[in-house]
Length: 262
Image 1: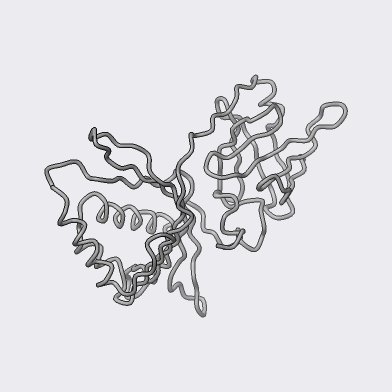
Image 2: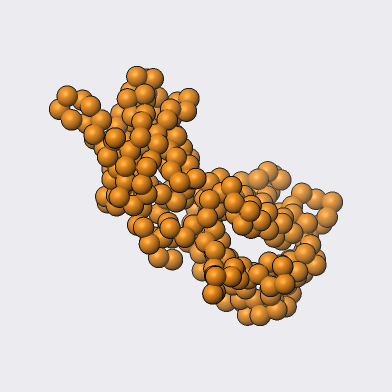
């Protein structure tokens, strides 16, 4: 996907062309499609509920997978699901689990002539699989994108993309900073892209809030914080007198925005 799709799961302070369209997590649209996401993957992975899957896909559904290839139309996709379910013993634990990465889900509404007709849903999920000892072990982590269409009050997936599958790495943990250092970053900042950004202290890390979005920032160094969900970092810049002047936002070590403290 475009770089703007990837940056900043909470939808602030990065390339303005991406973030203006993302809906806040407290909106009805976001909640509805998050619920649909849960129902879809629960039916596919937990319950082998083909009837529910059928109701969630359009007849001309298309599935693109970076390893499994292209599947054209709903019935072809459901055929493979039925075959996989037939090999499973309902009395045994499920062979695999799908886990949505917390904070990764994004929803972008689609309008035509001012009327909502669909939405693009993007997120990151990980998988676990049963090993020979009947214990779950980590599998791949991947990105997914769903194109949802709204017709006669019903939401259905028209296209699904599953991509960037790769092995999971150990979760990065933040270092411990003193309350004094954390409190020195607390305050309001102004970004040319996002407007007002508020930083508060939340236990051992910082909480960033802007325009209905929020994200937890964990300390990597005394003045550098990171998102656990993505490769985004936040660097606080001080004056010679040690006063905090601004916060710089980096993607893959490249500056994409900054917010001055006000």
